[in-house]
Image (cartoon, rainbow, N blue to C red):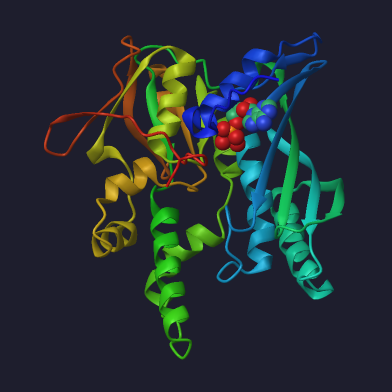
Length: 345
Ligand code: ADP
Ligand code: MG
């Protein structure tokens, strides 16, 4: 054994995943796509099966002092469905692994599963298995989702071409601002438990943090309009990080325009209240679970009237130039790393 010790913070989460990816090669013809996308792609006749897994840890991904268990159950399913949506696939099954301590009652587990059931109904997925274990470090929920899509309709992160139009759904930054509101109210409550949090004004933002939805509706709308994106990813880590994934995987540069990026009025106003630039919440925030995708310019006609799809820029040949044109017409590089879990605070 050597004495060498390398800190994980030197690689970061993405560096670590890249390293793991390099150490494994695929051995089965049915493994069409391994590590490196929103979901793995497995060949199954005329169709592909897509598989994705996501783990939520108490104290890292959620805080039970403001996250009701029902919402947590719903969110745990939604974030997995979002990765299936990002492959342009339809989710069909989930399995759930639960790490839980005796701090939780049966009623608490019921509440968690009520949320999981609501999400299963809304996304039409079946809970088909899982694993249960005791935990000494808080609640752990790990979900694996399995989806299906016709072979020629799978959308990966690497298919964009130069001049493809960059699209995003919904509005961005709200979940991050919602989290700031919740954290602030928590601190107020801890200082003075008599104070009741006043969240009414922030209902939309808090809802975006606690009750995210996977955009399966968009996957259906794209199919209805006969549009297959050239690349796609869900926005879980902030727009900047996801744009860089598309850039890296497609070996192209991205150019976006700040004034085209959809930001809700409440997000904008509340970001200012917190003295944060709203566009920073969009680029470096997280957990919006909207879709980011590229389309070939000839498909623009099919989507241009969609009320919830926004065209924010385009791909270009220079892979090293990922930029945003600001409202002041200045050019700023897109550099964010998204959430780096191993960052030394
Ligand atoms: P997402 O944000 O869409 O959930 P991640 O950034 O978590 O995606 O993962 C990117 C890719 O790396 C995926 O293909 C995922 O399956 C893979 N991956 C993540 N962690 C590991 C790990 N510890 N071992 C193997 N593959 C991993
Ligand atoms: Mg994803």
